[in-house]
Length: 358
Image 1: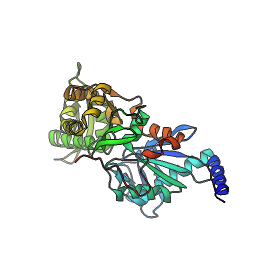
Image 2: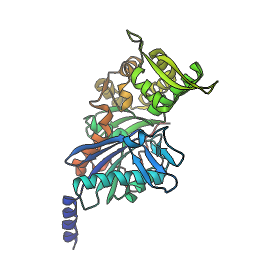
Image 3: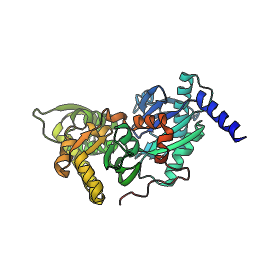
Image 4: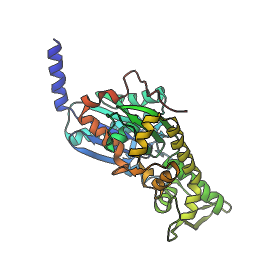
């Protein structure tokens, strides 16, 4: 009888679609086993408040930010890397899974592997599992995002050597030292891309008395953010509402303004990296000193960040290839070799790594 069930399971696997999801605060990326990365869109949803129906998801919903009538609400259902609106997240994932299944013409519910931050609570982790399950997954696996980023960055996580990864995403920063398919020490910060955007909004309001939106702050970050002074000054015109008169006003901001706006957040990340290194066992630390620190996520693209960390830690620092897709690429590698990586998955009882530093 067991043989029959095993045979049926293999038949189901043969016709189903295995999906890897990087469910990020800023963007959601989807990987299909055998196909690669097929979707990369903002984690934003537009809802009709009168009917409760989904109006738009991803890029279409992002284009509506700040431009909707009263009955349309644009929501970012994840905050700081974790689900803040369960029902909307479930609807968004169901939409994405449905879209993928339609494109693949799959009639069998997929197995789904989802990345989760290393520092979330078991309640938050179960919310992620339940949201994906309720959205139509046949089976749900979870993997800690720094582990997925390390695998996506082609680090030898299964070998008896220390590997250090920093994943700076939209809602959180994961810092982890990994060896033998396990996390030796880790730290999770709720300081990342969205936090930088908020710091820029606050700076422009305080220094220029102009209120700008998150999208304008993000554009300024992408265009002007840097750690060190550039050879040539960069500037950008931003438009917003004068906080005194309430009327529209435009001001010119420079790369120096953005550096000052994000400096405290950068200091926080640097100190967190130092804290993880201080808690790393000597033999593993020796490996990290020799092999270097690797950075993934959107924050890796901030000019000068790798040099700053290298100067402060006295350890080589490298940016992984295509850092924005490191986590979802890691989920894809795990999906393609699920038997090989089974031990790194978060177990079904919902226990995350106990090696998080305070």
